[in-house]
Length: 440
Image (cartoon, rainbow, N blue to C red; front, side, top):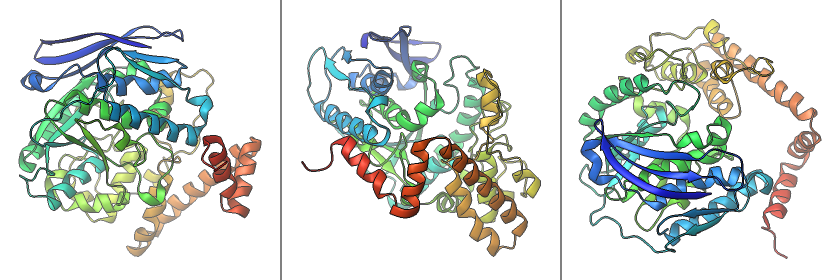
């Protein structure tokens, strides 16, 4: 892969930087990858090779590129961190899915200098995780402290947009930005809208979630290395639920350079604890956007029907705040509503992406079953045994489905027996051997 032809400019009220990404070892089309923001932040945005390295390494690795030749200088700290991150991904998923890619900057490796003054930023989608990071930071740091969040990036092209063959949903982003603007003003942070087509390099959801989204977010932060010195990425999972995922406390800090430090924040808190944290913040309740449904109406922050909406509404209900959250139209949760959750995608060979996505948003899966289990005790405490019964049945259905999937795969059988009788030690041993972690 080659990253060349940096370009910057201002057009239509947007300042942008871009580079041409050319594949060398696989049959994929060249792409002009861009990062843009409002023109008033033009001086803060730059064609930073470190940003484009983070934007392209994971796709290059996935598709078997032998090298990543990138115009300009690359920070050696970032290079070393990426080697570590790739080793972690190979340990989790195996080397077959993550080929070794040689990083070749045309001007060699040199550490950049950070901004003269420290400035901390975070990413703010309007979801539970990012709102909890901002809220906790405001409670922990005086607003003028260098560790206090001063900038929040809203990124269009990751959870909104990002699919090359679907509508990019700019209307949804505009609605979310308008909603977040008032919160940002009250929280005394600057909201920076960012627009990117980075995911067009490979817009597979599983790849983005499993491997890429921490590096992709870090790429956006490095593009603003002229403005910030630290960027906080809100955790998706809490420590007890940590597993292989593309944004992880073992990955994200490795995406730091000598100029921009990347922090992974919030894994100390469970999902329900995060909801409890923001439930006492009225401004957050008025802008909460947990929905990832690409097919929701543009005027709605939340569809109120997808798995993530149902889960967040149930969490707010447990916290006694669902009625105070106007971004959801319902003020109660019914068993019939939770019965719409699905465990298995409909079997439709060759089904188009939009059909699969419309069903995928209703799915229980490995990324969210822990959060649903967490809701059972508090729902029992408040006497909602009708909801407990539905959630427990759905979780049991999921466990049975996963067991059937594993039974069709001899590796799944071994894993299940290992969990049952050896406490997972066999899998850990195999990972150690595969990753070369055991002493010789």
